[in-house]
Image (tube, rainbow, N blue to C red; front, top):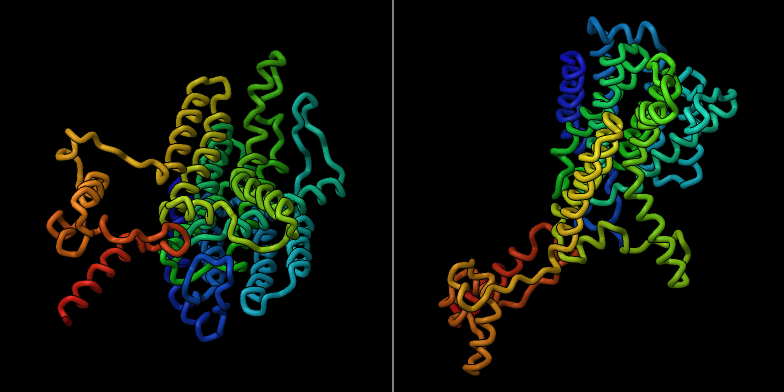
Length: 451
């Protein structure tokens, strides 16, 4: 565990330290595309953050190769080299796209080639556990097609969710943390050395995301771009392929006892295929809703709009940071819920915990829609911002318009409530609700003083 944590810290440190120089390079290189209609940010922001993430990946693999225990991963398996080869190819395609905006079909072809490079070097799915059937060996073509499909789907899912500052990196970090715990449990508890490469990939992926997040949190100073989103998507898929297609479930002694016990015991075998889907769950739901919405309006399913889930959260009234945290919450709930179920699939507490947390998540989603109303007798016990209905009624009865002087007598919080509210949503991100009200108050003071 110490060597895995050391590798994680080295990867995070290299990624963090290189992101600053990469940002300056991206500005000089002109990798700052114009703001599109569907973008949330309001200022041109440099891309190419994937450059720092790729060198963090290389540093993590280099350090792991020189550690006593992790060196055996490189000696006994060719999977780290396969990952590095595929990552270098997909990273190069992403850098070109961040700079020159290459065609989508070319990117798709590059993703398939990168997956094929990993398959050629041995990182492929050899067998597949199927419920009710058992372990099914795949032919070379079947394994190749399934591997390529999993890589392409995961890459595009991560790329699709990259719509808010820090969203993709945070969600992938959460999914990789759950995946690391699962893979480490297989490697340590069952003593299966074949799970070591997947554990290493998950640790490095966490380091890449954690090192980049401080630069990418709202307001972001740099975007990872396709060079980063496709890269971390490929690493996530590589870990799933490694632990699913290379580990023989017979070694875990799962297929023994009654049929019911076998079904419960083989649950951990399917989790590697499900954990990458935790990062796909939210983007897939967004994709389906987008297709239905655009088709219902008579538009093309590929037409860009501002109706994605993160746009909806902003329009509901959530700030940029809160919208990201809510999507973090749902990603963690799905990922660690699946992990808890793999540890003990028969425990009712895990199901109840997931249900309770889902209810909490729904409340958080609808929180801006709730308008608190304090009783008249309790208004002196609550903050002034919850007394606006009484203040508005008082001004309406007295027939006195709410001015700066009358607002100030009620206190600074009530003064801000009397001012025209800022519309929450895309135009109100980055704390604009509070900043906008204070700025209008200052403008009024300056106007009155000038008279």
